[in-house]
Amino acid sequence: MTDQRQCIVVAPMHNEQSNVESFVNRLSDTACDGWELIAVDDGSQDETVSRLRETACHTSPNRLRIRLVSLSRNFGHQRALIAGLHVALRRADELGVDRIAVIDADLQDRPEHLADLLKASSGIDVAYAVRASRGESFLFQIAATTFYRMLARWAKSPVPENAGTFSVMSTRAVRTILENVDENVFFPGLRSWVGYEQVAVPLDRDGRVAGQSRVGIKGLVRLAVGALFGYSRLPLKLMVFISTGSLMLSIIAVIAMTALKLAGLVAVEGIPLVVVLIFFNLSVLAIFLTILAYMVGRNPSPVQARQLFVIGGETCLN
Ligand code: UDP
Ligand code: MG
Image: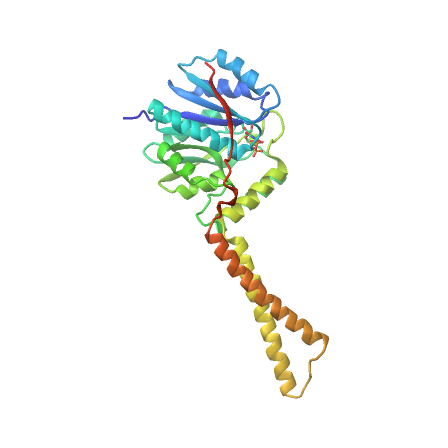
């Protein structure tokens, strides 16, 4: 029988020197006996690791064991998360723990809320935070809301609106996630795809305590595009819509031109005729391209079968 209050917490960190100490302290204050933090250092170039080591020295391992997983370079938030989940799953099996949590280390997710998520996940597989309020800029909030609305509407398996990474999962959910992760990791999509019984817990989200968003607008756009392509059929639907639409328009134009000519009203010749024919040809081509895209989309190619991340080392810090 596994203890449902115990938990392995995965936190990716990239240049979080100003947040790491207070993150670990707040986490250890909220932790129950036997919790373990898997701190994934995603190629930080500042003092993150040394401050983590220092803080770990002052943290009782009975309260919170701290394990540092160092990636060999910066792989990005989503991949660092997946690397952490791999180690967390192994540790959960070793320790007989059934709950694994993921949380950002920048204190935007409040460590104190882990207790709420743990409680909500009791007896089911996933409890994830949906942002009740965001401590982010107005523009960012609009962009994020639009993105999540689009995903919620068009995703193959619905990705809940405003759900981020902050969540508590059962080990079987994590195992399924890791077995199905692909190159375009989008964790909230993957977690929702897994299924089982899931519950959304509305929680407030703070602004960044210190430093700048490490993901940045470019990273967010990349994530959004990856999520829309990986988890929705929107791009294909657009192709079908546009190509069949233009084919129908050109067929109507050809019929209208023929009718006009037969009725002896206007004889459409020269450039307008060429334009319509080109339009018709291009539309047929676009339809074939769409079919091809569908076929390629059904067979995920193993072209880029590279590892998603490289772990450089793993150390127990306290
Ligand atoms: N992070 C990471 N690798 C990166 C960028 C970010 O591990 O390349 C970590 C970061 O330290 C933080 C979490 O991922 O704990 C979320 O990053 P950030 O706050 O920059 O993302 P945002 O909240 O702006 O989406
Ligand atoms: Mg953040």
